Length: 92
Image: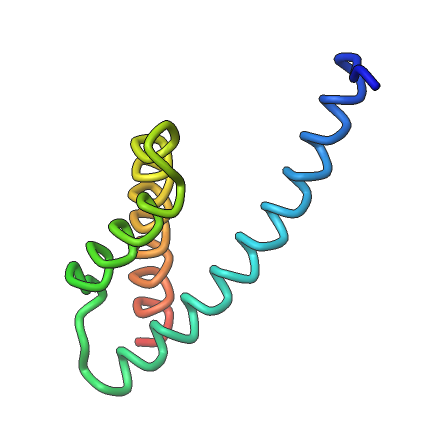
């Protein structure tokens, strides 16, 4: 069965809905990490952890998608650090 453009876009919309739900869930956990880091006097940035995650996920993405997965997660890490910093500021 051949998909038409509307079908493809409908599937993309469903994936986008799932992604935003996962993003919100991830950011709630980032807030929990911020609280833990505040309580334990840890810095927001853990570059070793980010590097390990990038390595694992880019390898999992495969050769074709690896550079895009890397950019995706670099952006996600930046947003997570910004959100953590904002959460830490609110906790003061």
